[in-house]
Length: 232
Length: 407
Image (cartoon, rainbow over all chains, first blue to last red; front, side, top):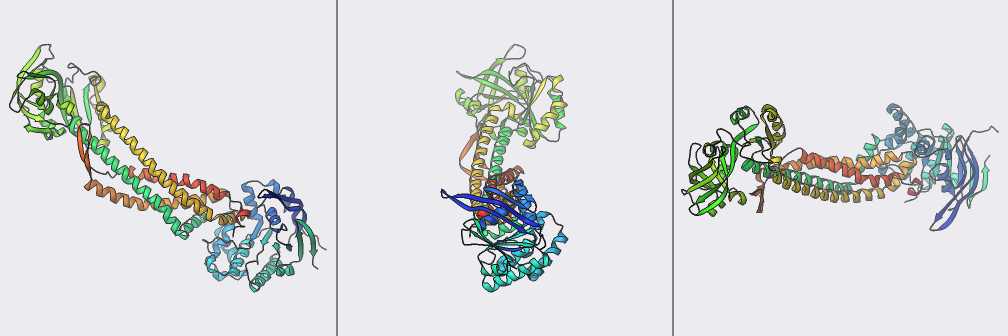
């Protein structure tokens, strides 16, 4: 089998926090390697540490001990506003609740990250239109998110996550707010984009549809990896 | 640019909150603009009335006369100075004066008086002297034996119009100066203390009584605008060569010092009132902006998650507050201008007249000037930025992971 470039390497990652005076050990030592182009799902019941783990590898949350290396760079080496730049340039997010900026149009939402990156206007417009065509929303470019259905909003979120070609796309329960038909269509589209563009997708989910489509399924239970299955 | 776009659209999106925030800023701006315009109008009106009624805006004396007045500290060639004043555009008018002290008596009544020699024609052009006559009439410049006395002095001496008054003083040559004058007019200046001793003679008669020749103690002048006082004084100092001539040129703030101090104390009170207005506005703005930020924590969390820097979030919140501030300033300027214009024409009538420097003021007028709008504009923008900074910091510190768990 061809050796893939590792995008994420986690070494003995642990996260403990206090909740109302009670110590919660959310992640208890996770060692994982996610390679470029993977379409991987982290699954597990509620409270298994999936979201906390995703937050840690994206730099949204700090770890208590261990090490996370994203595309060769240890996250612990990145401080302050560099972390914002790092997220902006290397990670795309898809959230359960879409989380689009309500006052920006579809086009503006998708181009927002490129604006922060300082991408020239013509280039931004070209890339936004291409990705909107990929997700089937080109004709909705000037609409506000509130004027779109849930499925359409999540497709905008996918476009926003992918438009700047990040190393990794983290999707936290992306189908949880969608009906099964819309969710299924969205996942097919993401899978197609993964295959077409070679982008790395890491899902946190307990949705059977995602598990079915994922090439690798990692099961977290009580903050540790209980199973790691690579489908043939 | 995107931050401007988001800020502007957030203002439109949260209409009710934006209107509430804007109302406190707009209200504060208009109130402050009116308050400054009103107090500037009032104070400048009082200063102008006081100086035009009594002292003039600028006075020329012999050096050190104001600190230590003396019969011998005189302006020896007043005609030369008057010639210079005639050529100065911004000088409204001027009048020479001569001062001394003496003892006046009518029958068996006598009182210490302040002899004031005035040129009646120039005095009425420069001050509101003619308006103070409550009985009798003005004397003419060439009247050699006419006197006008203050109301209080007339009461002390039991003197009435057409009664003879005898004055005894010391002349500049050391001789006893004495003469008899007929009371042609009685004055009420509003300043009771001064009215108890005022003894006005035509300048020529006073110079003759006191053997002063053409010398005077003071030339008081009025200028077109109070703003001209300082620059005109400097020009005049140079033109009459105060050093060589051993003269001094002083503004009203120096020779009417106690009046000036009273004005300054009152103006300090204005700033305190202004500060209270600012505080009320600031609390209103803080409340609405903080609520708005707390409501949008999730959005800030998303913005941070996708790579927006904390500084950019601060910029976004402050932009929102300041865009609202600018809109309020533009609208407030229009309303404030209208208010200040209306009250600059019609004024505000006081139920009880105010008394300053012995002058009663019944009507107060606003003034339309740039500072009435610049000070509130700067105050609104500065306080909005300052007050908005705390919520902005709170927004910038949003923990994205936690904020996005809020549904």
